[in-house]
Structure formats: structure tokens, C-alpha cells
Length: 417
Image: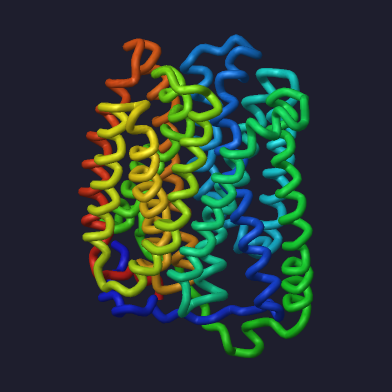
């Protein structure tokens, strides 16, 4: 069984610092640009689902797979990432993942259903690697500001999603090339992020070729958390992340369609969805900051689940007249839930290795659970002919997230030392 210990109040658990990078400002810029890409290519496709469906003659269930497949492979790829980072180094792994992400975006827009779904697979694996690599990197490079840095990069992820959701339809009109050109354009930010990240790879290689950490004696070896897959705390964190992500990805896939099916103009539906993503930015930044100053985060977790319940209820009762209210409440809930789930990874571990390990588990379980959302919602809609059953199921799941979050907010730390 894994070892737990009482968490330190206000500050994150103390960890050994493995700073190998001489330019923190450049590192920070690289983290921000990488994070900007981690949700953009998923959010960009949501306003285009209807057009993609018509182009290939897809059913509602098959259309849901466009969003489900990347999420599914985020879960499948997550457990492999700690091994990759140990073998090749975090910097090289992040660079490879960003380049792979850009390639997946381009593959997805080729004129073939096979290429469409193959691109979704590639995108999912690339995001999985980034999802797991980033908490460990933050824990290593910013050990005493891990919660604040988690807030920064989770916020940046949502800024990317907001830009993608809001600009996809205007890009389609501006480029005049249909949905393919609009979605393909999101490979360019990945190329920029890779270029800015490249110096980190070169610096890490230079450091590795010089005096090793073992020779200096400054970096104690970090052991993995024993029996993490048997830890009740790790499972609660994983389920909180999974259920919260399921709610997010279901609405990423279907919120504009739900609004359009109830009579809202497609362009306005895209704006409502983009506004919801914009609201997420504030809570994704503030909630991890608040979490880092608390010994327990149970109240925060329950509050996020409660906001999800309120927003879904408005969407169920008044999908058009209450759309902007629902978008606001859901934005606060979803941004805060994402930030809190990521904060749990750094707050509940005592080392960078432990953060990567818990990140691998929580995101493997979390995204496999989340993958059920878009396709399940599409299938329920196809069977029932409406969205009421889908939204009622989401209300039930939000309650389950509150239970998992209450357990994840305990004042203990998984200790691999």
C-alpha cells in the first residue's frame, strides 16, 4: 500500500529541485505556448461537427467519436509517459509530443474518414503525453509555486480552447476552404510552440553531457509511490478528474449542437460555447491558487460539482433563453474542476516523480472515463431523439464527482520517499 503523510498547510510538499534550465523566462514561455495547444485542437472541432457529419454522412454516434477518440487515447497513452520521460528526458518528450500533435491536426483534415479518425488517435496520444509530462515538470522546476504554476498552465489551456472555439467558424469564412482549412490552421500554433521549446531540449542535452546530478550529489534519487494503483486517495483523484472531464468533453462535443437543435443560430451557438470557455479561464486560474493555500480542498471540490449541477439544470430547463447563464455557470464549474484536478496531482505528491506517476494514473483512468461522454451522449440522443435524458445523466454524474472530490480533498500526501 502507498504511504501517505499529512499535507503541509499553505505550501506544497517540499521536493528536491532538479532545475537544469538556465533561462526560466524562456522555460515559462515554452510552458505557456505548449499549454496553449493542449485543448485548442479539440475545441476547434466542436463548431464543425455538423459540417463534418454532413461531409462524410456520419451518424450522431459516429460524430461523437470525433471527440471521443482523442479523449480515449489520452487515457490509453497516459500510463506510458512516465517511462518515456525517464528514458528520454521530459524536455525531449514534450518536444516530440508537440510535433506529433501538429501532425495529427493535419492528418485529421485529409479527405478520408480513416484519416479523420487516425488524426484523432494521434492527437489523443500527443495530448496524453503532454498531460502527464507537465505536472512533473512544474513540480521539478517550480517546487514551491507548483499550485500557482498549475493555475497558469491550466488557464492557458483554456485560453487556447476559447480562441479555437471562437475563431473556427470565422477562420472557415476567411480561408474559404471549408472546415478542413479552418481545422488545419491549428497546426501552426503547435509549430510555434515546438520552435520555442527547442532551446529547452538543447539545454537539457548540454546539462546531461556535463557533470551528472549523481556526481554533484545535489539531487537525491526519487522512488516511485509504492502501490499507487491500490491507493484509495489516488482513485478518488482519478475519479474526480474522470467525471469532471466527462462533463467537459460531452459539452465540448455537443453544447453548440444542443443549442442549435433548440432553435439557436449556429453562429450564436458557437459564441455561447466560446464564452463558456472564456469564463473557464478565471476559475482555472483562481481555484488552484485557492487550493494551494488550503490544507483541505473538500469544499472547493463540492462547490465545483454544485456549479456543474446548476449549469446543467439551466441548460435542461431553458436551453435557449438561459444559454448565456448556463454558459457562465458551466464555465466556472468546468474551469475550476480542471484546475483543481491538476492541483490535486501536485498537492497530493511529495516529489516530481510522484507527480508524474499520479498524473499517469489519474489521467489514464480519468480520460478513459471521460471518453464515454461524447459517444454516450450521441448514442442517447440518437435513441431518445432529444437531449433531456443526456442532461439528466450529467446531473447524476455531477453528484458522483462531488463524492469523489470530497475524498480527494483530504489533508494527506502520497509519499514515494
